Length: 217
Image (tube, rainbow, N blue to C red; front, side):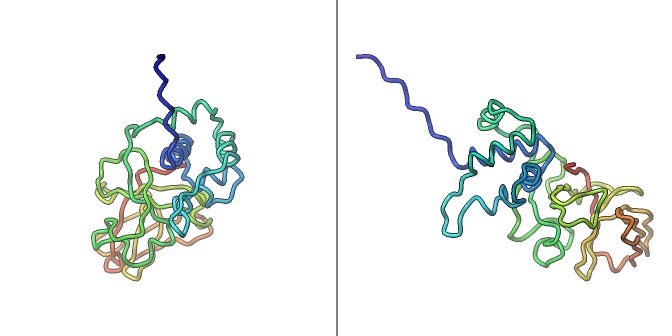
């Protein structure tokens, strides 16, 4: 009796979404950035949309995958390869929307990510185990960063004049600026958007400051 071939293993929900995440990563985009580039609602590929409110798995539609491939100039063969890829020299870092960063409970006193509510994204390795990512929202940081861009912040990386940084004040304000000058008493920051003013903060107003080490653009 002839030996029957083994049945093909079905694709899993996690595999398909991981392949879309890798497709976005290859194009230097966040999941929401990929959705926007594909002409879809920006939240289409967000991780919060992958499980329904009652716990059921939500799969991407064939149409949305097709549009994502077209937007990134990728073939179906490439997508199939991404379905089987493992980690490729990057690291998974906590991800948070920029607007949420000003709320309490997401950072400890040193500016390291803490608490619940963080998502996760695979990005190039930083060498900092405390690195995290913020997804830009709105147009206040144009032309440097656009809505949907992801910036990776490394609390352990040394900061020098001219670096782009994320600063959180003791009042809970979070901003992205360029470090112009830092003394024991003052922090002088240049705005990335010419329509927004530069800032000068007293040292006691600064809860923490961390350098931006990578951005998806």
